[in-house]
Length: 71
Image (cartoon, rainbow, N blue to C red; front, side, top):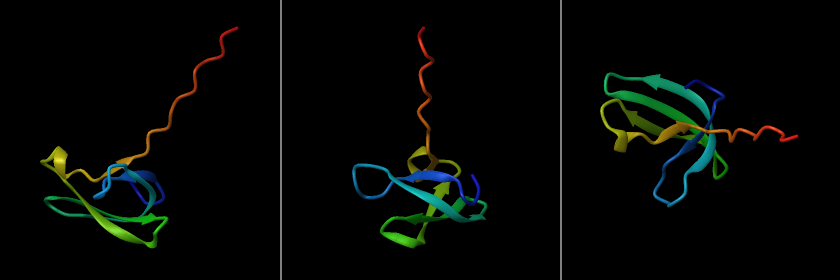
């Protein structure tokens, strides 16, 4: 993922929140993403751990594919 990608983030709420990546910092243990959210336009840092699915907080937003026209 890179700056300006549209993502969703896992927070303490039940639903994932949509935002945009502002910055990316890589570390040995994972990757930090600065994500702009509607409530936090300046950004909030989230960390994705390399070795743990439970430690993945930022994911690319999945765009629903459109069904082909049936004619």
